[in-house]
Amino acid sequence: MMIDIQLDVRYHLNVNEKPDHEPVTPLKGPKPMRKSKQEAAETRERIVEAAAAEFRRNGISATGLSDLMAAAGLTHSGFYRHFASKDQLVAEACVTAVDSVATMFEEALARHGNSNGLKAAAASYLSARHRDGPSDGCPFAALASELVRADEATRGKARRD
Image (cartoon, rainbow, N blue to C red; front, side, top):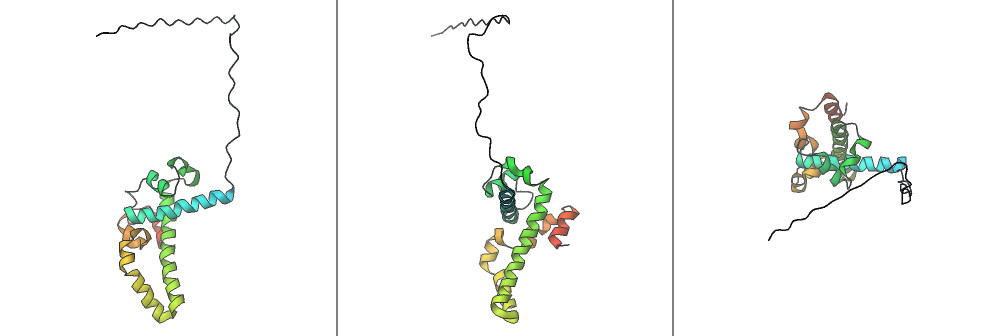
């Protein structure tokens, strides 16, 4: 069976005639709300923390912007409102990751005193939980092979220069 359909569409526009319809005006609704500086700072921190975990879990090169923004609960389109480049985020995420490990050691020392605290910190660092949870693990163990090829600013942040 064959169906033959022909359409004859003709549209004539005469600029001297009045249109037979009302002009279309753009919809006017509420403007999107801008985030406050506080909310923007909180969002940025959420991105940095998610990136620190994602970079340690998957590596810097293997983590795309879409993946890490999704991990922060955001879309990738907002990334450049917070960071000039992925390198800038890598540097800040390294600082956050190093700080988290330093905090782990400081808390162990505070809870157990200096000599027992050092043992507790070492036990926590060498634990199966720490080993099996790379997103919360040591950034140097997870990222050293990539940081050595990173730009100087990123390496400096990781070294805490």
